[in-house]
Image 1 (cartoon, rainbow, N blue to C red):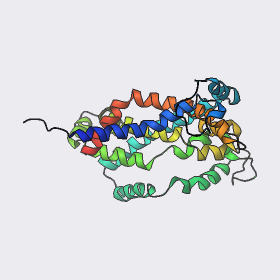
Image 2: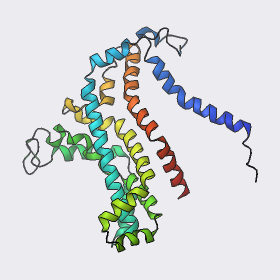
Image 3: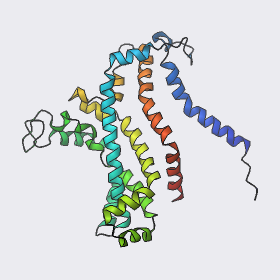
Length: 290
């Protein structure tokens, strides 16, 4: 059977879509090399008059980049690791273990995905600020000076578990044949060993896909780090710090400086995606097949 020919206009649609996706990133990159007066010029100039690297030097000199990178990497690494572990374990339990209330628990997990994340910002803030016995709080969570909001735990505690991650892993693990798990149990493996030695290796594409999605979401998180940095400025992350580069008096003149900071912030995300791209594509294909 001969392969079906793809219409020529399909290539034009793909190329046009690729250009539209790349264009904003290209504009951000080229703007980061513009001088302060070039950004607001009319008509708009896509390319800079001369490639000036002083914006990058100014970004490092005006911000404590090592500290911002450390906070962002710490927050992202802990959240990604926690989401992968909790999602895989909970997905395995909901997919393969038989216990009372399993269906109700799965519906509860799905229900958590219906609420916007902004709805939990204030409750999370109050819970961490009034955590008993921390930050000067008494056992009732009062009379303190910030509770957990002054510690590094405030960076990642609200993001340690993902309802979407549990749902995604559960859908993948359902497709694993029960006979494979029964064979592992007959060989003497307990549930922990079965999960680690059988389930985790077979869900590697799904885990990497979930890890990439979590990485991008947590790395670019802005509202929550902004809230906790008002209590403890030492907890400021890279997205929050970049906004400090923008002047409120004349934002157009500082826009190239902000773009330089955004390029610096985008490089880790781009490198991680390029390293795990084949696993991500495979995970998306498998999810569609299932």
